Length: 194
Image 1 (tube, helix red, strand yellow):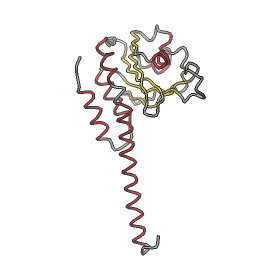
Image 2 (cartoon, helix red, strand yellow):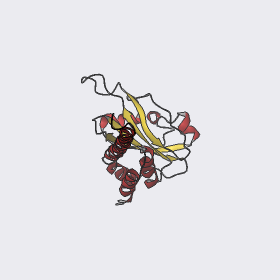
Image 3 (cartoon, one colour):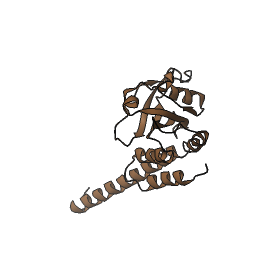
Image 4 (tube, helix red, strand yellow):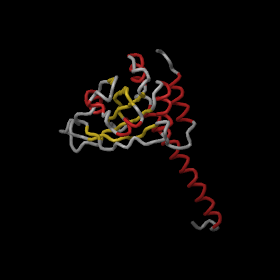
C-alpha cells in the first residue's frame, strides 16, 4: 500500500483551514483507512523525570467521528490500557476485537453505542516532547485492520503534529495582523495619540 494521497489530503486540510481544527486532519486519516473515526490521544505531563509514564493518564487531544459525537474519555489510565501500552512501548498495535480485548476499552459506552470493533493505534511524539497515540476505529461488520493499514498509519504521526503547529502558527499570525490593523485604525481615529 504505497498511497501518498492521505498525506497530501492532510496537508491540504491544514493549509486550507481557517481554524486550528485538528479534527479535519483526523478525518483525512480516518477516511484514508476506511475508519469510522480517529482520535489523537495525549499523555498528561509527568510530574517528574523518575516517572516512566506507566502511572499517568491519557486524554483525547482531538477526535473526528462522522456522528459529530465526542468520544469523552479524558481520564484513561496509561497502565492497563491498549493505547497506554502503545505509548509506553512506542510500538504500533492492532486490536481485531476491542469488545474482547480487555485493554482496548471496548466496554466504553461510546464504543459500544457506535458498534466499534477494530482499533489500530500508533505512537506519536508531539513537538513539545509529549507522548501520545493516533487511533483509528472501525465498526462491527467492517474489515479488521491489516498489516498494510498498520504500515500506512505508522507514516502519519510524524506529519500530524507538525501540520497542527503550522495551522496554529498561521492563525496566530492572522490574528496578530488583524489586531495590528485595529490598532492602526484606532490610532488614526484618535489623531495619532495612542
